[in-house]
Length: 165
Image 1 (cartoon, rainbow, N blue to C red):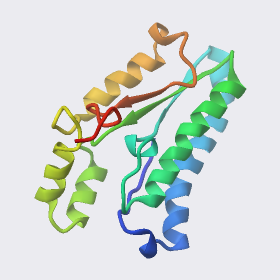
Image 2 (cartoon, one colour; image 1 turned 90 degrees about the vertical axis):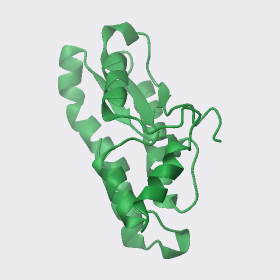
Image 3 (cartoon, rainbow, N blue to C red; image 1 turned 120 degrees about the vertical axis):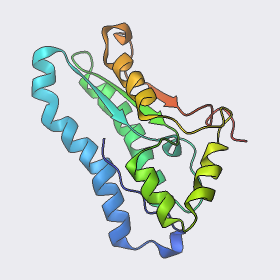
């Protein structure tokens, strides 16, 4: 899992901004998975990618991030089909989560308090996730309890994908 997020209208996107998003988010996920395949095959491991709710349901002023995270969603599905049955590949799609990246985006917005209020009200549970909540979903998907899951995209988003308020 690696991400950057420079929120801006598409008119402000440059090729460099696009490339940095795609290289960090999508290309990084691809080459990390590729490098891990021999070890994963040897010990029946599995891959858990991290996308975003925005890779499933985009928002305005975030085209490069949404497209790259959407790419991680389909990368997960493609890898799941190609690497089965030896390696399971699944994906967690978190909603707004209190991370350094979110704090950076809030600061860059010019009004961090308003930014946080917006995302606290973005989903039916009316709050921002704690990183531990998302980590617990990763642990489950990687565990033997999820042994029959591959190619799954699991939103951990406070209900945002079900319906934004």
